[in-house]
Amino acid sequence: MGIDFTALLDHSLSWDELYRLPELLDARFGCPAAALDAYLDLDDAPRPWRWDRDPRYSNVAEELFEEGHLSLSGPFGFSATVFRTGLELTHPARWWAFVFEPHVREGLREAARAMATILRSTTIIYAPDSSHPTSGGSDLLFDGGSFGDVLRWFAERIGPPALGPQELAGAEEETSELGYLVERVSG
Image (cartoon, rainbow, N blue to C red):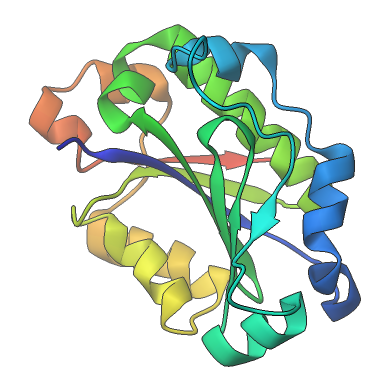
């Protein structure tokens, strides 16, 4: 088992846009080539070109109101959980690869930035998950917290973000698992 890569993004989507998000992502999320080459051997992997929602629900509104979030399985291993004020983007690439392999990091960051453009995000938080201390930030979204709550939680519980990927990569492997990055983007 490894530590998963996770990106948390804020968004300013209306309810109507949230209801149409799977179709919006299908139309506008082009998985960057760098992300495709970053980690997965795609020769034998399925290549879905859509964002599929949980088939247990008849529509997005039903899932949002019943679960409090929307679960999407996307192309090339990407998955997203959408909340009222944020989105958790995950990928099978491990946090270690994000920190220590520049081509993996750039591919995943490029994909997160593409998602941020669609969502009109202003902030991306890159953090390890899998029950590490930083996973408490995404847990707040599952518990109904806002993206602002998540940013405050990281600052108070984990400390300041790393100044850049080089700071995380310069740390011991165990220390890098406690770090996170914050990237400001234009929404």
